[in-house]
Length: 302
Image (tube, rainbow, N blue to C red; front, side, top):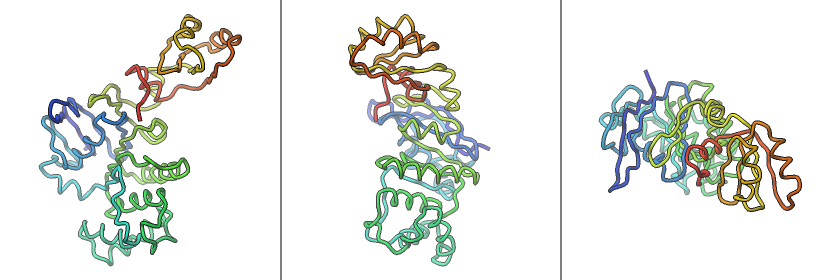
């Protein structure tokens, strides 16, 4: 049985198709990523999984039950990390967990029994009596994640879980999410961070304007659609540079002031640039940003 099954799902607001004939399947124990810029439909898809938004067409099954028809039953097995923290700022860490536990019918004794393991997971043991308003952004995000686990859910729906965090806090959240995957949890992750998707996702769906434009394992997509080294060149006229090095590259793309050269033989391109002053040149392995640029002709818009 799939953890999530989307079948030809569409959602329109006014004359805008936010989700457009979208199909995907998420296996149990898998991290499935929905990758795309703001406005691609990621948050709407998350809301439909939770039964908070009804599709105009298509079928959705979550944890074996139809949604939104039986959304209340499905939500018993789901933990949610929303895009923006909705913690009670004047409550303590402990009080936030107690209140949320009651949403799932847990009494104080049951919440107190699981609280130590949740606080340890979130690295908040020393903050149990601190008010949320006293916590850092990273601590609040970890508390939101711990709160989502209070009912020991099979499925976690995470909408942009690391937006606004500094790199250290982001890496700590990634570490915690990887530990959940090793415990067999299923995660659906919406993100516009390429590195996040590449690090965490077993499979991902690349979205543009509510459509799926690619789906697969991150490294398979990179190998299939790029498959060579990338040289970024900026500091000059990208169109002039394209004429100079284009014949020696497998493919070139211009985005803003940057020329992206996809090359099997990087030295051929670098030789042509040695006499050009004022250029900044970066050679690197391909990544998901290159996949998005290849598919859409533009870099990911945050």
